[in-house]
Length: 414
Image (cartoon, rainbow, N blue to C red; front, top):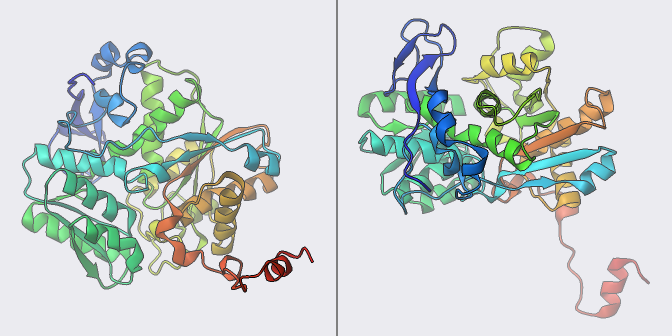
């Protein structure tokens, strides 16, 4: 990989357009709107070409010019990204869908897409010389941040809801992070983490490093276009928590279009969040421009249980602008989606992945998705970290005497 420098120039407010130097800044000083990293695309065109991409390593540092950090020295990061885009022929055949793909983020270093933004956030914090990193999380980001911090030899502090299942947070402890359980919801943990970031000046990735951190997720959009042979899918369905992932994938698609690496990006970008915590989907269904927070999320999809989504308004705008949808399947539909993907394609997704499968089924049934469409499902993380939600009658293993006749009886062949 060449020693490329990022082509980022400024931070720009997504609401009023105000620009700021590329430094630690959480929101616009004029309107308190969210900030995004802006790149010098003319400079990027010189080195980010299809020909040169073909000579680069198969991880997300291949897109270095469009990431807001310098390529880390060897051995400083876990090299996430360039996960498989799996053609789901069995699922498509079962549903009568011409072409469906799963962008399989379960194979990242800590088994979720959060390894991408965590890598960016930790490296950026290191570049700034911050003394520690951390995050507020419901599980996946905690694991990813702790692992990235361990690799970069940085102290890590993670704030989670106190009632989070231990299985989701044990890897974070194993990676050496200090975990603090906050009584209440994710939003309470996030609020406390904000106070900590201000007091100690640590790099809390999804708080004071957020404008840079979210840039890691847009590489998913880059990869989808490249893996489809420089063609855009008709539709992408993305799990909705804070809304940042959907917004980032959209940015990835539009940046490649701006660089003329792909043409006619008319992809309909849709989001799926559980019915028990669906502030974005509820606003979409109501035709509202505002999002009403959910005070007490109740869903098995814990990674999406964000009642006050920081990027919700932006995600809602993108969904409407691209003629997508925001859907809210029930927990039972989510479980059914998990099982269907596992049984047809051998991909065991976390509940967040089950939401997009559930929404695919619902929208095919309603006619909002055409069975001739090319659809990409974003599978954000592994179900191995959320097995407690998957346990049911049909997952129990029968105890059978160690004789052939007993086994035959259970199998129903006698």
